[in-house]
Length: 64
Image (cartoon, rainbow, N blue to C red; front, side, top):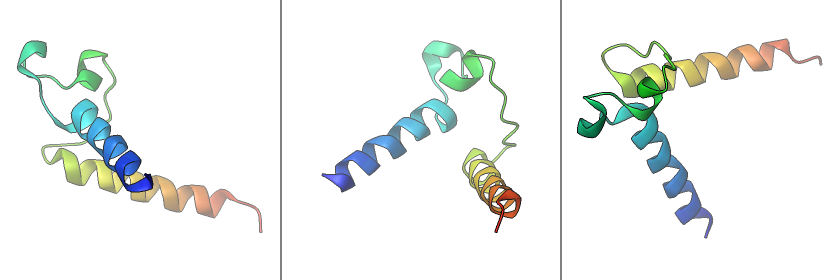
């Protein structure tokens, strides 16, 4: 069950952030909502880098 849920969440992320939609004039749903994550040309890599940078910043801000 966990694997199916993880897959669904991953696909939702792909659909909303990475995959451009012809019905939205070549925009992703996130772009159509005017949410700009500034992911660059390689949206997969940009998303991963944002996640990794955000994760390391969150860890460095936590108190020991």
